[in-house]
Length: 340
Image 1 (cartoon, rainbow, N blue to C red):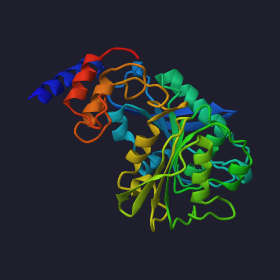
Image 2 (cartoon, rainbow, N blue to C red):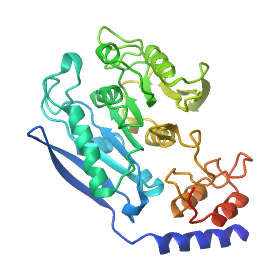
Image 3 (tube, one colour):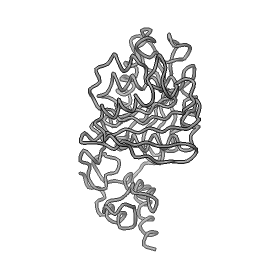
Image 4 (cartoon, rainbow, N blue to C red):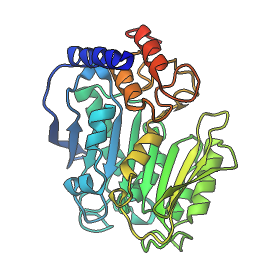
């Protein structure tokens, strides 16, 4: 009974506080060094620029399209529930092929992909007031390869990456003076033909990549290992003093699988990356009780996040007992509207 009363009050706050606005999927263009580039922006339901939402980019596979990227990794339902903006950029013809990302190093053909990423971030900040401390980049296949370049060349603009069915190019590792921590969650099958699990003459192995990010991020050296089902095992290296960790999903016998090929691929990516700002895990760097999305205040979005975790996890845990229950919801309501 008590929970029903709380839930009713919370839903009243939600509908009272957020303006009614239809969900939107918008085709955008931007000029980068004289070249017109395009991308799709998905705005969640009841969008309000005052929310200062994070942004999740997803780069489609080589030869694909931005709209195809939606089906490779559909973040739209999560964007509605967890309050973030999704961006699906479009590749153009390059030395990598038709509609293919011009990865740096040996594939570099003069297309300014990093300028494209920076320009999109600036446009999203101007158009939608995104939280520029919480920008993430995921991608599939060649789109996964390009996000390693983003981590290498734009570590001050992107808080975390999620390469799927891709390994880091050898030249991306060797040509860059890596010094800035970047969160990474990596999904790869052991029988992937494009990104061999043990690497090849062009790309480093999954183990070498894990070692790179664990070292770069100052993460703890021993991973937590969990079998998540479907022949998939998750390895999580917890954050060290620098508040950055690393995560890797391996699918035994898995091929060249897009995130949609995993039972919870988009959820796994978002759950890990959304913990981070540019400075590291939000709670680790000094977030405050009840500010689950790290926007500096306890508001409707934090209440909705706590309700989604009610009875199932610690996503809305304030009192430190390891789960989300009525006491957490009541305490969060007492903090409603207060800034950190």
